[in-house]
Each structure stands twice: as C-alpha cells, then as structure tokens.
Image 1 (tube, rainbow, N blue to C red):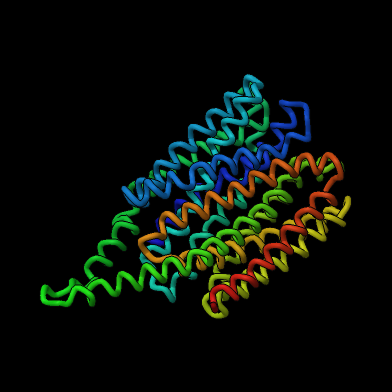
Image 2 (cartoon, helix red, strand yellow):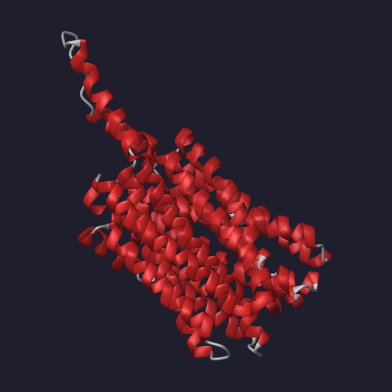
Length: 408
C-alpha cells in the first residue's frame, strides 16, 4: 500500500516543483509586472486549499483511491489551461490554470494521510514520512526539467516556459493510473471495515447506561481535544506560509542578480530535496521524541533559513543553503504536525480534520505567497524574510501553547 502511494507521489512530484518555478517566471513574462510573480504560488496554493475539503469529503464517501485519481485528472486539466494561456498570452487564464493545477498539491497531501490509514499507531509517523520522502525523486527532478521544457516549448512555437507543463500532464496521468490500478484495497475503506469488525457489539441484556457510557466518554474526549487539533493545524499552516513566501521569491531574487534559468532550477531542486529527502529521519524522531519537540526544532531551522534569505544578498551559496534549510524546517513541522493532527483526532473525524488541515495550510501559503510579491517589490528579500520571521516566532509560541493544552 505504501509502495503504491510512494510511486504515485514520485510521478506527481515531477510536475509540482517545476510548475511553481515556471509559473512565477511565466507570470512575470506575460504580465510584464514582476510584483505579480508571487501569484504563481498563490494561485497554486488557492487551488490546493479549495480542493482540500472536497477531496476529503470524496475520500470519506468513496475512499482514497477515487479521491486521489480524481485529483490527478483535474490537475491534468490545469496544466492544459496553462499551456493554452501561455500560447495566447492570456494572463487571466494563466492564473486560473495554475489554480486548477494546484489540486496536484492537495493530492500529494492527502496521500500522506492515506499512508496512515492502515498503519499501527507506533508506525504511523514512519509510514507517513515514507510517502512524504517519495516526493523527493520527482520533485527534485522536476525543476531541472525547466531547461528541456523550455526547448520543447520553443520547438512547438510556444513560450519556452510553457514546455515544462507537457511533462506535468504526462506525470499526472501516470500518477492517476498508478493509484486507480494499484490502490486496492482502498486504505481508508479497509481501515473502517477492520474497525467495524474489531468493535464489540453490546449484549442485548446490557444495561442501557453501561452501553451509552463509552459513547459519552468518547464525545467528551472529542470536545476536549478540539482546541489541540486546531492548534496543530495552525502550526502546519504557519510553516507552510513561511516556506511558500520565501520559496516563491527565490527565482526573482536570483534572476534579478543575474542568475540563469538553470541556476533557478538547481536552487529549487536543492530546496525541494530539503523538503522531502530527510522525512524518514524526522518520522523516526517524531516516534522517538514526540511531535512537539520536532515541531519546535522545525521552527528553529526555519528561523535560520529566514536569516539566510534576509542577509544573503547576491551570494548564491548562502541563498541555496537557506533554501535547503527552509525545506528541512518545513519538513520537520509538516511530518510531525500531520502525526499530531492524526493522533489528536478520533478516527471517525480524521478525514474531515485532515481536509481542514490541508485547506488551512494551502490558504496560508496562498495569502503569504500573494503578499510576498508586493513585499519583495517594496523591500526585496530582506523585507519578505522579516515578515516570515514574525510568523516563525508565532509558530513556536503556538507549539509551546499546544504542549500546555495537551497536558491540561
């Protein structure tokens, strides 16, 4: 099961990282306004945020297999719209296409929760982190396809950057087929079936009071844990907003200082490697130390990354190191945070709460991604980094608060 999800996320990751970089540069080219380039990641995040809850509801009704394959199919449509918008130089359609393509991100996020559906509690962080790790191969390769994609686009008489989206189309079709054919039995539906078999049916002679007591206790536990669940969701959302805002402005920062498209692709590849490559390590640390210490460590790494982007200036090595750390910090918070959301939520409520988490993180990324373009235009990378630093401090404070609430 984890292997099927891993293969699908490898294929899906081929287009996601590249589309974020190419999308920002396409917007700047077609609109002629670099300040709008942040809307590339913004629209991508908006699409993922909008898709989060519908995908979760579809999974709850029909299972993960149907939800994930449907998301891949819609992502193909988004990539097609981007190609058409590039050919016609129609900025409105470009924004729409990038938003629709954002559902590919929502699919990847739901895949990590699918890995946890059948996992034992002690293996949950490991299985979840392995699926997150599998994104590394496709996601790191993806941005380096910008160069070949540019040549393909020019050969087809399109703007060069449009060519990368043909790779995205092929990758999303392949990912959808892998899920549709290979994800059997469906992990969410199978987990529900096993839970129903394991549940004890009350004997007819049991006292009504005794039969109702477990339900009442479960309801009280659910109410008491709601604040912890939403705090965990907030931690993931803040870390994602910081990552998106700083990452989205990196292509512009590098090209403004004379960097080539190839350099942009390499830098984003390093960043994405930081996002995913060490996820099994952080899954193991989450199992050993608990989620909160890993989350706090993640915000510490994000803080160091924001110092690098804020003071790196024209130094390519410093910016690249900062982008790697940005990915690592994001990974720590995301892996441990996803385990927190799952652990703190009763099984019956998990699909809905997981969908809310995905929607919140992508909405936060969309908002800061949009703001980052204007902030960059006003004060460059230093100003974007200062605002990111404020969010990082807030995230660390909420993580400490979650520890208090959980103990209470």
